[in-house]
Image (cartoon, rainbow, N blue to C red):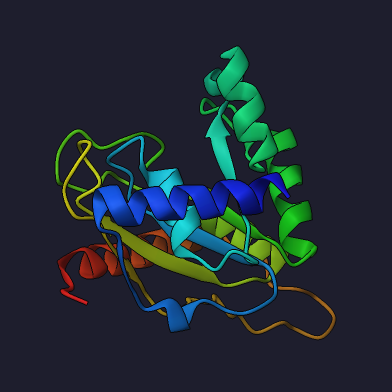
Length: 201
């Protein structure tokens, strides 16, 4: 209930204040586990990405654990479905939480650059998105947010087509993805995000 109310309020704010434009909404799967991946340049980005997807596709964002140490903010983001992740090293608890959401058919949101980019250049992606996608067997949805910096000015969200890594299984043995394969998949996804950043909708 909190998410739906927050989604509706924030969507109105984004339309009125930031003149939100969404392209490619038809690319969002109507059901099933999904990893949503976006560039990250502003504090607005989680709100923008969440409100750009349909209200019934709540996005459970991985958020840096430091945010959960701020009392009022901690409660708000927890109610919105965010869960903490330690950015240094592999956070097994965060990985388990993300996989549980995906296996249950929910949407997990990730900013694979790991932090906000201070320039217009995409940072090198981490492989967490690829690892979660391949382990849970769910697609990745690339999203590009354009113009989110600042308080005013138009924001454009371009949603691409889903990307699914498919590898042949041998008999009853499931394919194990190597680190190099996860790196390659992550790079492919970020290349798509880069293309979407240049798209005019």
